[in-house]
Length: 341
Image (cartoon, rainbow, N blue to C red; front, side, top):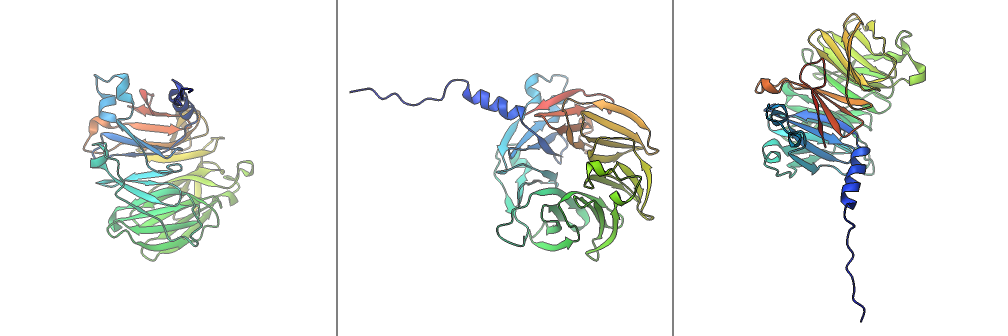
């Protein structure tokens, strides 16, 4: 009788698969833990990796310190967006948002606490959720993405309380104007819409691509990033990266950057932006390019500033995008090292 030889996986096949995964990895989202000592990064395979910033920044750090302390499968598809509350890490994928308890994650117990799906028009609709935004005064979460609506969820009850409609195409980004209180949304339709949270109505619309100085028809009309600071907004994407005065709906500064920008933020007296290309751009409000600081990824999709007061020793800027690496900048002028999936 012939002996049956059991099938075995060739040695090294798993390593080859992991290497290919890393080669084709995109990191879409980042979020800092409430204690400020850990960073979560979400990729296109639905995985979330947790890095110890305190260990990586230590004077005794080794190469292993730059690897995740834990990696877990959070979603079936990409992790498009993440935010952190004082207890939970919230992650968004295709059609749903999930909550994970930070205390349990750090004990490597990566079991979801809950999941919610916005009330979509049909049960067959599974649009991606591109953006999450916390509204602390309301204790609510705003979700937006492929169904062209902004959905508000009460974080205490888990109930969806309202849907804001006005965009005619995908929503890419959200920002909070706390004093008003207003939420800004930018989308594929080329509009930035301001929503009054008290009335749940659209208060203002800026169609950026219709302004000749901002328009770049060869790049399209989509708005891929925006940020606010009191009466000011900066946004970009297909149109040029532009600083706007919101009260007058006037573009005041056009930043001379050809490549579409995917992330932008105000920081002290600067505006930081990133997108196509491997550099983080430091802009003065006047439009002067103060610095371009190179990173290790060919394109950048997210920037995260860790300003948690509980961990001043972990105050860093991190940048991620079209690679398996998260670049860490201990000051804004240079990349100190990279974390890696």
